[in-house]
Image (cartoon, rainbow, N blue to C red):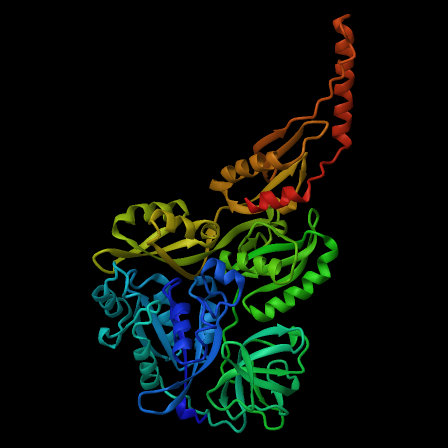
Length: 596
């Protein structure tokens, strides 16, 4: 199809504002899927996405639509995730489009992630079509949502379309607005083909399958194309599009999105954001994506050490499908061989672990998540530490800086006091408070990344009865009084339980870990001490009591000195056993403690 009849657009919104439901409706209305194939969350192909009701991967799909003017158009849609941890998926999808449908929930209004996604779309100079969704809800407030569009996002309210994806209201108007408002793709004018690789996945039979958007020229089977980043030349075997399952096409022309397979067998040969061009007449590269830097680190180890190579191969395949995930090999005394993995946030970490378990059948265990600390030593050298094991001794450290984030929290007015208390508890400070409308405020605060990792998002939701939302961005480093908390079992440090914490919170965390370890470590013939220590100073202790054999059972009656003699002999034996004995911590204990 000629490029004047092609429209490329994506759907952006806050989590749970109805993106996937709307894309289902668009697919059904354009006849891309039949009534028989129609099901909820059609584009969320992973079981994990359906269970949690969230989109994890961006999904491209090609639709054909006959507009009211009688002409036929090719609409290329990319449904994107809404959660802050997957904003990298959103930025990649935006680079393959000319327009974006911005969905705002009529009942909840503009949320934190809505604001972040609009800024991403504006940076890419996309045409934004606002859609106020869920107008059929009894507590929908459309005038309020329109006011917020103007006040918070500076988008004219009259340009907003009203819809209910669930009831199928306003779908026709949305399709007409896409045809009328989204600009047609323009060729770049380069000497040969230019196509952007915006996603990939691994297929057992076809090898690496690249999702591409053609910016110039055309792609057809049999062509020799060059991957500019790796410098590798490959022959195109097959091109096609998604509807939503892959189907083969003769060629991909300017402005079209689809997939391409070539003889690429190794996941390491492809880089997301790479440009494909003609091998004989190369064109300059397209602007790719900024390198994404992980924010959270955790060790992932196979429960059975024989699965190490298998885990390594599966991680390479997963990294191809999720380019924000990074890993490198590491070893632990307690857990054996494994990998140090980088993630964008805690949900991202959870999803990667779940995908490794389900899609690749791996039995894995993850260590306590940590962030990158910047350590300045007394001789002036600066080290970046993401693993507590590598933190130097305190006498060599001049200062430790921890990563900070700028967090934007939107909450109802009545919870502002609770939210400020929560931010203070997490060692943060509120910089400014902005009133968004009669009911809600936005708190801009600066917090340590380490503090918002575990339960911050959940606490916001529970404190505000589900009405609060949060988005964050990196905000440099700040000096802090951080220490390494070590867990000693029978006097030996266990590296899997070490973590870097703020000195004020070390004692509480040490007590909690010691109490948890006491529950899971099996009893021995002698008492086992579990201690939490900073440097050489023990700050918390629990004791696993000894299994006691009744050595006096055979003494019935008789002199007390016989019993005492036997008890003394047992005491000596236990002392000797303790000096030689080492405590074997079972794998289940690690799993339970790290889960907690």
